[in-house]
Length: 372
Image (tube, rainbow, N blue to C red; front, side, top):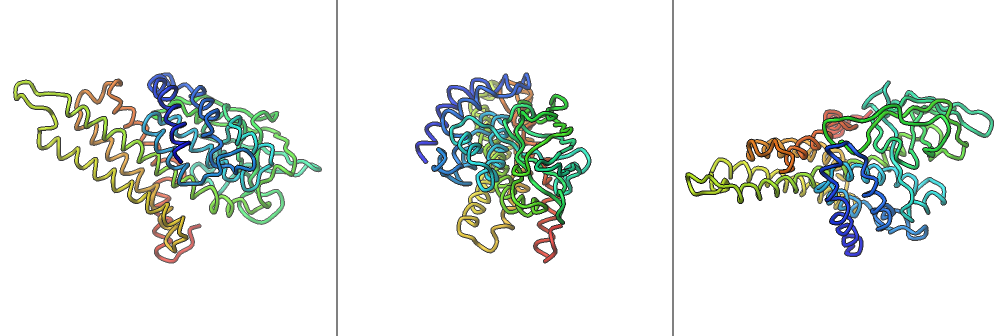
């Protein structure tokens, strides 16, 4: 663990942190950071050692995302989606792609969201039609992180022939007929290149299927979703860690000269900063308990998985809102960093499964109802 942590910290100090403000300001994909993370072994952290990877799991992936999110939200989100795609590639994908990921030369991402079904990713509208030994894929994908930058997409479609809602594919980004269909100019996470991807007559071999035809939803729920939800919570916690610390540094260093006191010595301001710390620690505790539940196979593990993104995401919104209040006019300036955290925090609420969808799933689960 120390080895990957040291490597991660070097990349952050030398590449990620110096570029974070410009990545956000210009909406630039953090290519230098991703290349450096690949060379440092971070992109291959979760594939097995037999293909050159780190052989580590979700706790370490969540730690990487949490640490990156405290510095550059865009870079953290790119890595988060890479890890979410990688778990499926590791379990079902070809060895050459796994080796490329292990070597740090391959960036993957998840392509589930679609214009037709929006955040209801479990109802893909894209088609998959058998053509001999191949399959033709057609889709209007939306909000795909690393669009046009990833080397491959874990792609969802309707089944070819089987019953079920979804089938999954590993689609190389270089496949003819596939490409980004627009740029991204968003409120937050401005460098994560979350743009539409069009697939028109995309031909892949039938062997590109990940799992069985029609079983994609079961695979996604069992393999990708826990990783995505836990890492999303880690992202929110890392962001809260950073903004709470930045707020504290501002309060201690800024003075009310007429009172000869720092902002930290003002009771109302101090109370709000304390609320930020409490909310951050609560979210971090739920994240740690979720990882513990998964590691121990506890009966409540999946309930914790459903809870953790919703809880941490909403906490991040509340904490960054407090940071804007506590830091006052200074928070509106880019150099303090608070307004960037404020914008980045809002993505968790709308990234599928959205907070409202997760709350519905939780309500269904605790009342003995099927999730879908």
